[in-house]
Length: 502
Image 1 (cartoon, rainbow, N blue to C red):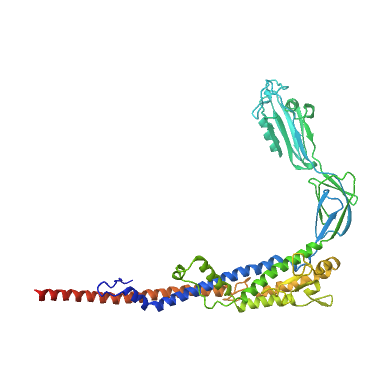
Image 2 (image 1 turned 120 degrees about the vertical axis):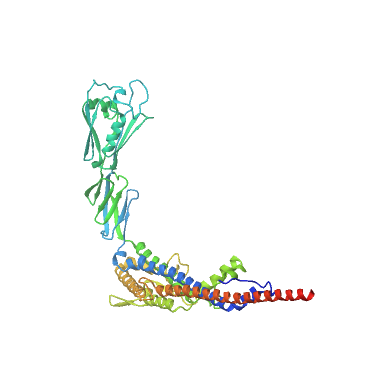
């Protein structure tokens, strides 16, 4: 960069003069930056829209093209609070009988209060020799065997064995075990419910005395709840479970309360509301995307608006800047051909007929329609509404044809919507295939081309800024020479004046 000398000798405002001279080239830089900013905003809008389109395809259509999505069953019980039932698609429709005879229990032992031989409070570090009712000759030993499930742990005990030693071995056997110093009792339980998780103590020699002194036997006052399996009768057949959960013929039954011999009726039928919600949720997502695309495509023109430079922003308030930029962003996909291609393709698939059992059917046959031209809001003319939908003010008063068909003719409903979903899924796959140099797979817009154009702007802006700097330097150099020449001329004139005056 050349040395930039201002008009000290000429008296000219060289800075302003030069900026006027280079204004045209600075305008080119600003224009390129504005175009790049507009492209960046356009990319961001497409990325957001692209995410929504892919979500529609993967979250809804990917599943709805298979019949399993419509094989929804539900089971009701003649008495609540007895059990909960999750019904799989392979469950059998019809009525069944259920009795809950036993609930699963966790094995739990509450020890008797342990006494010390001197009346003091025992701790986990207390030894067997500290316990009342326990005495052992020097060197005497015994064994406590703890069987927990299929595992057995043998604990060798003597006078120096501590309460902590007993707890450690109980935990090693897979049990929950603690000694409550305040209550002076052991609390031991299995980690799981059921008979297979039950536990028991046995002992030989000195071990028998230790168990009694530790309050771990019924003789010493311990209270024991045995591990127990849940037992139910389904259609007269008996089933057992260690954890109250039974998976039987497509149903997952969780027992909750004993019926005391009372027979409960289970009724398995098509989950009409579940199928209805699947279709309704899909249409809600579809409508949101179609409405957004129509709004973007039909947006008002903003041809007189361009992204702001930093200097332009400095002259505006934050609210004014936001309104200005929103106006531009809202219009960036106006009359966009790519947007129109995607939107039109989706609308075409949704409005097309589908042959079911020799009959061509449409969404309208299921009580699903768009509103009339004058009844629909702007940019919502291609949104679908379900007759009788309680959440839709426009059609809630109409007859609920969809629910009736799901209940009376589920096969036709399934056949139509699986084919519609497959057609829409395939069309969206076609629209998002890769195009060399233009589009990546899975994208509905020319992401590669936009990125390449953005990078080209970056290169172009750099070149224009370099030219601008060089152009400015050239003019500063010229004015610098002029200032230098004038300085010399003024110096010579002063010298001549000095001589003449002399």
